Image (cartoon, rainbow, N blue to C red):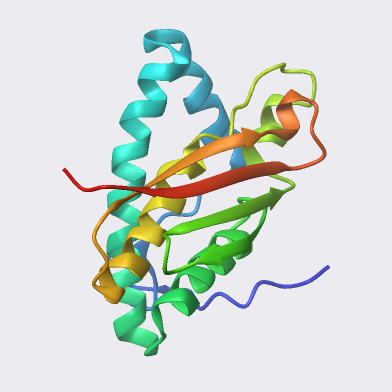
Length: 177
């Protein structure tokens, strides 16, 4: 088994975990999946998807800004580093499979998604929408650093919980405003 190379520091007085100075929480996968299922049951999958999208987008943008400062990474490498860290934390194996900074388009593949595995392959619908806002936020950082206007939009186009071999996401850039 490959041991993750994520630096984790635990403050002995507060118990707060940090990685690269950012506070972190370590959770079992079933907790996140069960929480998603319960919220879907309460408000519906589309309503939860919309709420999650905005918060994930902002969180990814904030993470990329902080990590770029910490590690001195170029914008695209910061986005790749973000996906590497998500992979190391058990969300699945995340990879940028296409990226065009000039047009703000791209594609991300997730193999062994924690959400698809938690729901199972016979769920019959995409369930990895949790990643959509995160990938949009990573692309937002890339565009922000390039001084390029526009709003990145991400959609899950294939999900392992819907019978596909992997989860795939497409990114495009829409005009601002």
